[in-house]
Every structure is written in C-alpha cells, then in structure tokens.
Length: 197
Image (cartoon, rainbow, N blue to C red; front, top):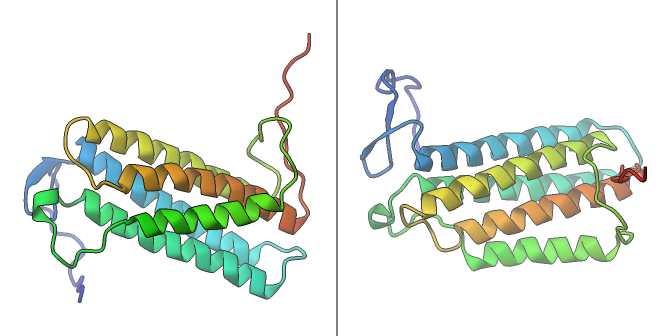
C-alpha cells in the first residue's frame, strides 16, 4: 500500500534526493537523470492517451480503448522500470516489480502484428502527420533519450538486466505504433525527401 499524504518535504532544497534504499544523491546524477527521463516518457504517453480519446476521426471506440490500454500498460511498466532505476540492485525488495523478458516479448508481439499491416517504407518518416502519431513520435524520441541516459548510468553502476533492452524495444514499438495510428486515422506519413540538387 502506497500512501502519499505529504507532497513537499523541503529535503531536496539543496539539490539532493534519496534513492529507495535511503542513499543521498545529487538530483543531477546519472541515476536520477535516467529515471527522471523515464518519468517524462510516462507523461508523454499520458498526453498520447488523451489524444487517442479526443482526436476526431474514423477510429471506433473499441480500437481507441485498445490503443489506450496499450499505453496505460506501458506507463505501468515504465513506472516499474523507474522504480528499478531508483533502487540499487542490492536494495531491491523481493516483491519489487521489475521489467522482465515477458514485457519485452509483449512489445515485440504488438510491434510485429502492427508492422505486418503497414505499407513498406521507402524513406525515413518525418514526425508529423496526425496529432496522435506526432505525439507518439515525441514519446519515441524521449524514450531514446531515456535509453541513452540509462546506458551512461550502466557504464558506472549496475542496472536491471532488462532495463536497456526494454527501452530499446519500446522506442521501436512507439515508432511502429505511430505508423499504425496514421493508418487507422487515414492520415499521411510525411517522408524525408533528400535534396537532389
């Protein structure tokens, strides 16, 4: 049971915070940067969820609900991933939720199912097109930044075994999801056109 009765403590006013195990660290440390960027990604997906609900178009309620549930599930998985990053491996609780290989497999299954229905790409996709797809591209780029942060952290301290693979696969998942959404909404995908002169 989690209880958050008091929101501010003033304990971080000098730029420090504490990990789950109680260790004091600077707020700009690699570990905090890692799970802070994961938190930003969760927020991006929250905006995507609102857009899925509110963006007009030919997408039926059941399909919207399925897309929303996918994003909600990923938000929960990212919260678990952030909790993992906020906890040194030696301080993990036996029942602490962690990212596992099954979470990555689920992303791959969804990604593959969507990709089978998509037209072949003959150039790079430029973020844009419709509202939901554009927001998924924002989430994808934040996911790549989170991955870079965690890789930097992993060069200095151990991180969970599945954390980097999950973020790597999730960025691919969000890319394909943006293309899937463009197809559902009947929106064009802007493509990179290299200069020919």
